[in-house]
Length: 81
Image: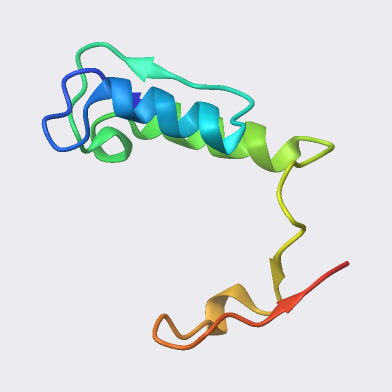
């Protein structure tokens, strides 16, 4: 999800990165700028809930042992289910 009017990261670059990452879905909000989650919280929440409910993922299966205890300055430790 990104804003077409983002002056920090151009929409074309957002599309390229989403394609390269194998995104299942790309949502471009025409009148939004850089702070899409702040300006469009309902759309953001809907997308997160939709992604969380997806039966399969094309990620490497990373699941933090306790997401609330992660130290942002330490290397991540993953448990693979």
